Image 1: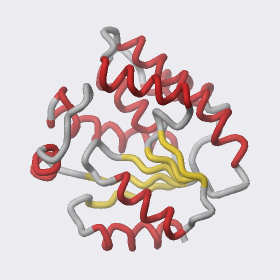
Image 2: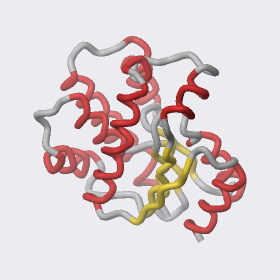
Image 3: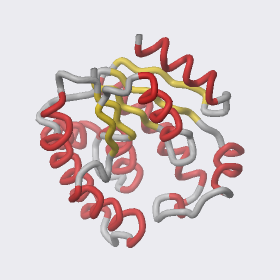
Image 4: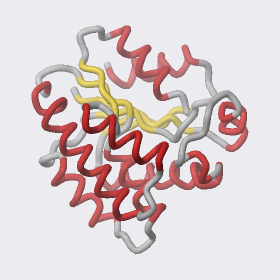
Length: 191
């Protein structure tokens, strides 16, 4: 099973990924961007150095996704794969950053990068303005977070649209719940 965790920054994805991995220690753990050596360089470039052109940002994410698929996903399709982010956020950020892109166009590009292999299940952690503000105070902002809270909430709305368009089995969970409550919901969804 290929399980994808999605949500905007500070929604608690990484915490829940770690909890699920503890439950399935044999699972392959990964993330996008940054799940490969090239991906780590691309992640650094986009999140901390910045890219001046949104098309360049899109193609960098797609390059990372393609490399990640070939190195991590494809060789492990017979195992459980748990990924911290993936094509859902990639498409959502691209749509938010460049209004002339169409959802179908971005889905086509991402399916191409992934050789048409989509996650089996998506877990979307939903947040709100207050929770983002509270959690942002605890960390250093990257280039994406510097775009603001309203931007992140807009991304979250687009993520739901993308998941529905891809017709993937998904669950939306309130990120404001306790870590254990969220974990229990995820366990029930994965089972």
